[in-house]
Image (tube, one colour):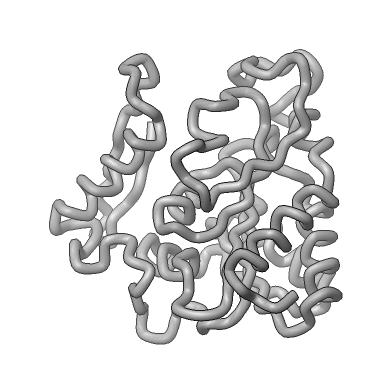
Length: 239
């Protein structure tokens, strides 16, 4: 089930029917299109467009990275220390790159940990973006390159729908339901394959209410960094 809330407080929900034979990502796209065309939650003229401008709140057209360290549950979160290491390596390789963290107000502490570990070189936007501003932060710029590094979240879908280069740290619970995506060349799934893929979050190795699923926790930083660099090269950004 997918949810989004409009500026006037209306909550929009959509049930994703995985038994219909329709790709789940297509179903989610229909939801975004329906909400955008309603005239309420989202102005149709701003429908997830790469050219969307939020009056200076969107990032400049330079190489940038957006981290999404939160998720709907602890079990789906790649360790925040890994996001920090990815940021550290990218800053070392490309000192001019702009780094941001997005998430809900409840995830502000995750953003703060990343920003503090990098001595303020990462901008913590957690809790500071509504749906439209988040879409603007995630949208591909007119120049330079942008990569979103995310857990498997609704935010990753927003980035993917807009055509932004998106690296998703993916668990095996519902592998191939939403990601990886054969139809979205801009989405790059990075994962640690285990023989228990397809568990539907009924993990036999960890208590997902308190700890990260091992298929996510064991995903290598090296693989994520490599995927990010390949994305930036594809976007003609200097690294």
